[in-house]
Length: 291
Image (cartoon, rainbow, N blue to C red; front, side, top):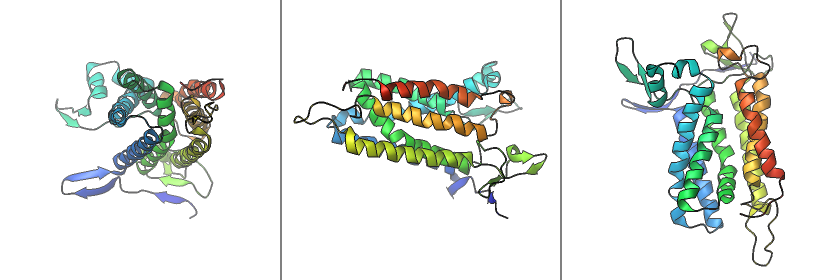
């Protein structure tokens, strides 16, 4: 009686034959938040407006392509990398049917580590094309990223996916999916998606508060930048270190996403998080200057 019975509709709304899922809607909301915040940061830092407009497309396609390839390569290589059929389903949002036809299926597997790598590579292409200082760009994106990550995890919650391990805590969620079964029965589990969403929201507010206090570019009267001035890489480091440190520890109370993780001391999510934490700490702590 104390647990939360969780079985929301997957669809946020439908109009005729068109329906929009909560997951897709929350992805869009997260991107709109990031667009709005980074646009505001560009204006505060007096970066040319013409350089901002292309940024959204670089980020959108970098995240989407990276997240899709990351899931397929890191978590299901046997499915997607061993046949032409699997490789085609990895690239195109379709699923082949037994009768030889196919149907539109969307991209059902997306990995945050792959999305991070894809975003970084897309931003490097953007920097090369539009000549924005690389660390100023990375810091601005990093300030907004945790809020987008929060929205994506809320989308996972609405999909009842990436669930936690069984729990007796009164805030445990009873997810009505096959993955939630324990000995054939539905059992309350940690809402790991909600834990991550709340953590990322807090990380966003902390990063933005630091930026408002110490991150604005140095003024002519006080030209010496601090370590926390935007453009030093501090916010890029903070974002990576904070998000993936939390991701590392929350994995201990998550259900394995793929079968090969069973019995591993550290699962794939944790192994992939360690390099990001190290890179993040390096950029937070290094001695640097505005670039």
